[in-house]
Length: 273
Image 1 (spheres, rainbow, N blue to C red):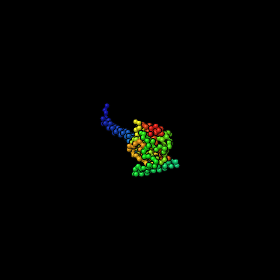
Image 2: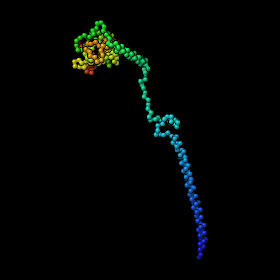
Image 3: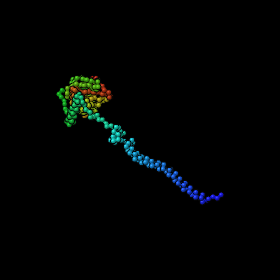
Image 4: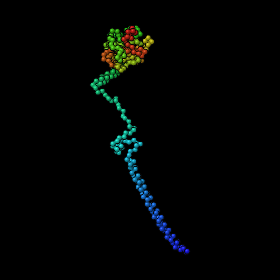
């Protein structure tokens, strides 16, 4: 049986274009979905590139401190305080007295301080003044190691130790001479020492014991000794007054032995002579 080779060849040739056409159609069908996916991806990238920076810029950074002004522009209903903010210190030194009693007390204290300053200035320029009056000796009478700080018969015994009062109040007229109760060295001598007012303090040794004697409320400018000066028992050191925390002329007299306070009247009665 004869085969028509030419006819078969033509038929094969005719089928090749048909196959190519089918392959192209199939490729076009496959490309369309991929193209759609690429378009959607491009659109999504464009949206993300525009929207995300805008969204990020609309929210304050949590890492950096936010000021009240910056926050108010975004959200006026909230408040953020920077962690570095500190409270301003309250200065209570500017508060003043408000009650009439406090005002009067303040005025009295200021007036007393002004008088003390004026008297101190006068005393520092003029030096010790001689207040000696007729009938009083310049040296305390007696010959013992301990002497009375005021002339005998010139004073009355007043308040003594108790209720926060550390000494004896020896009531005497103004300008009554005051004497060192024992020999020693002047520890302090000033026109104003706290509530003592014009005051002298003397360190002594009596019977092998350390004795400190204090003489307060003297008259302004009446001190006859200075700090560091050596004094003898019975030596004149000042005159009675009413300075500092005082309401009447008197000598506030204290005695401390080896750092402990003792009752002055009893100590004088047992040791002075």
